[in-house]
Length: 411
Image (cartoon, one colour):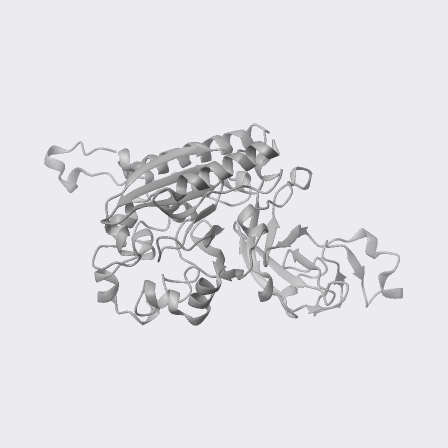
């Protein structure tokens, strides 16, 4: 959108509109149907113990539970008998039992017992099934698939999280816990996801009044975006007095961004995997997996990682402090629950955003036409190879060459 009124007066300005086809995630919406063809993380495995957990994903309220023998289930919250919530259910060896009349459901929803019926409903239970969704665990995280069962792909694997070296860990954390804002940011998932292909915001936002990340991020970068088989790769180059610093991130379609540690030039193979999980149209959740060395693990677990990013907890800051030292949360929330896309003026520094949106719209179109969306074949095959992180001098080319050689050997 370009100003058209005389001298740009706001008197003649017509407010814009949101692109709802690209942002709404409910069942039956264009983007919602597309996103339902992929697996999404919903909780850390450690969060699900002997009590049911209420979760919300893609606009659907659900109950997540783990049986006493360790099997995970995800079901519709209202018991199909009389509508009592399974949030108050009792978790047992074979499934979850409704608190009201004792109907027992397996993780796949099948009714197993009706304790108020003759013989516990032995002759009738086969006719009843609680609505359910598939779930799987990997890397210490529980993933859910909310799409048609006949189109369910394998749960993706990612090479950096598959092969850990000695002294490396997988740490699951909440990206907004204590530091960046509300644990469940109250704005649309697309605003958060596009941040991962927008490296210029780092140069401005995270250096507005102080260095929130490594000081080298205050150098205006040279940037290149390129489509790759599983999404978009963003490469930035910064030159300081001693080094050429490359920072590479990959957006794995549709919602996963992978990057290096923002506090250092080069932390070996420390990598951040960040899923932007759509809770609903107006709320999003970040789920992060660190591939971390002993040093990074210690920084995270001790709280030093948070303290280096922000000297004070986000929730302890005053409104004036938020104004003087804004971060991603303030910038993205200020765009509104769903930004007004028709008001935007994309320019050359927004090339990554434009590239991602084209992929997104094509995937939406493909699903509407009955086709498989983008990236399905790549994610359904062998572990995805990723080149992402912070590299000094010529280390980036070495990493790219190694990745290409391994990919060629596998093909």
